Image 1 (cartoon, rainbow, N blue to C red):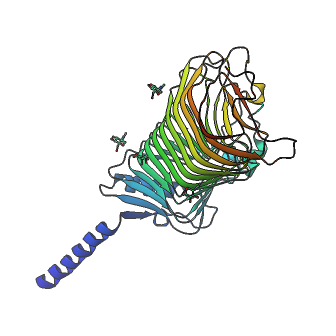
Image 2: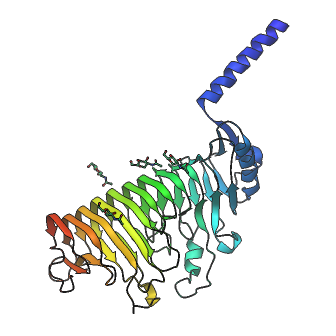
Image 3: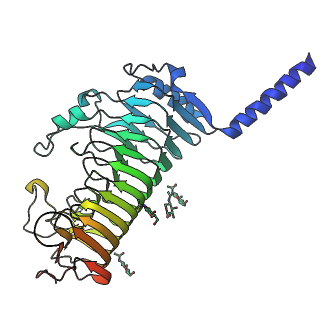
Length: 402
Ligand SMILES: *[C@@H]1O[C@H](CO)[C@@H](O)[C@H](O)[C@H]1NC(C)=O
Ligand SMILES: *[C@@H]1O[C@H](CO)[C@@H](O)[C@H](O)[C@H]1NC(C)=O
Ligand SMILES: *[C@@H]1O[C@H](CO)[C@@H](O)[C@H](O)[C@H]1NC(C)=O
Ligand SMILES: CC(=O)N[C@H]1CO[C@H](CO)[C@@H](O)[C@@H]1O
């Protein structure tokens, strides 16, 4: 009897040890009451599974298995005791009506260290109703319109493989995050969807976005104030509004943007390519420096290379005084392909804070539209350092260069 017991116990311990070595403990939401019917709210099951995973002293994963689920809203909070992930294998649907979410984020993850969001599943924001109702361009008190994913103060974390689909607002928003990687991530929404920025980065440091595909209705990646050490590599964008730093200089207390690299990326049929934008009449000085855009293919892209320090959408600004954002140490190198707007390179800096140390090298952009003539450039308050090929010639046909 004793012998039998100990052999069983040893086998059990052996299997347990192997299991721990092989993978993290799994907390399956269907074991917590989640219905796989696409209409019963799984938020409580998800929260309960998270509570156990987060309390685990060994690495753990909350699993949403294959199938279709419905989720109203969830606020996932750390800190947790060990690395923890959520793996989505199924499709999770948001309520179509934005009012049903009752928050500015559909899935919000806050204060977690070593978090992983993975799986080949789909987070579907079902945004069509929200886009149709969106009146934020004329109504200051609009919203809140929920974003698919919000990460607040999340560190040393990864988002990989999953798809964010048809968000009602931005797909992903990072606030106060450090050491955050997106890889093999997919973002998908129609070209006509309103305000559906792919990934917005704010006040975050050490963000890498690689091997990612972004198709959406607004900026593919937008980098707001206080963002530092952001690397974007092998990302395809289109449809969308391109890769954007800013807009900056609209509010008080904006923190510097420093250390941005966008490299080896392809943009196709986008409204813009790579741009830095700041508002005129800034309430306070700002800084944007050490920004590098290299090895970029433009396929039928509007405004492929753009610095715009008089950014003023919907005429919501005062053009009387120039932007106080100081732009320096920027490079645009090896940018080739086709432009859908005749103005291919526009570098319009602030008259009170001219751009400094901007390198422009190996630009080769052909205009494919049907206006007469080839691609052009426009420059103001900038004296770029040139190298390599310049097609179109940059800053030569601009009387305003200074
Ligand atoms: C970010 O990563 C660096 C390098 O690995 C590390 O030194 C730093 O502590 C990390 N930051 C946070 C907030 O964990
Ligand atoms: C991001 O990439 C850079 C350059 O490859 C690397 O030095 C850094 O450690 C990476 N950061 C993270 C959070 O993976
Ligand atoms: C720009 O680069 C120069 C030389 O590399 C450096 O001295 C300067 O501090 C940089 N400016 C900013 C604002 O980072
Ligand atoms: C997205 C993109 O432009 N990828 C390119 C990165 O660079 C490698 C090697 O030069 C190309 O093969 C990819 O097409």
